[in-house]
Image (cartoon, rainbow, N blue to C red):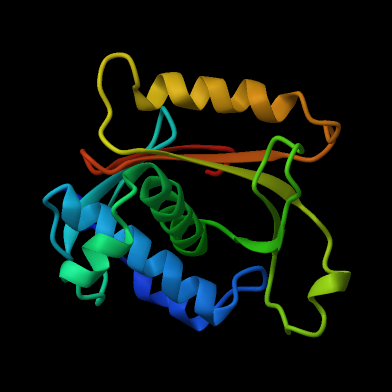
Amino acid sequence: MKKRPIHISLDILKQGFPAISKAIGLYLAEGGAFCMERQGHESGVIFEISNGSKKVEARLSWSNIIDGQTERAWNDTQEATEYGATAIAIVLLHYLSDYTVIERSFKGTGFDYWLGTGEYDENLVPFVQRKARLEISGIWKANFRNSLKKRLKQKIKQVEKANYSDVPIVIVVVDFGAPKAKVHGIW
């Protein structure tokens, strides 16, 4: 018997996370919804997540209305892909792991966010231990030259160059065309 897909929603971003304000969460959720709809997917689409040996199907939903104004605002698909992939990655980690984003990383570190585990009070976040590094990448529509597997390998090399070799790496690469994601460092 095939397992039923788990339900994940971009709308959870609108509540905020330790490193994502409610306003940024709203922005990211809209970017993720735009990317999905521009690729022809509707809310409730089945989204495949794999780590190479394990696959999970998720029913991805959102409530954002993607109208003409929204499309004009997100017209730069390269930027939309970056923010949309960030939305998907944060939501996937929320539903599929104990990790959550606790701090935005600086440019030049080779990764996007610091991850922590557990429940957080907004006033205690500065004292939370950094448990892992998160790198996120998005692909508008994967093809032979720009595959999830190839991008994941590139991102692993990129993050391994950073001076934090004792801290685990989590990488999420999202393909909006499929739609699916490859993850490294969870499960």
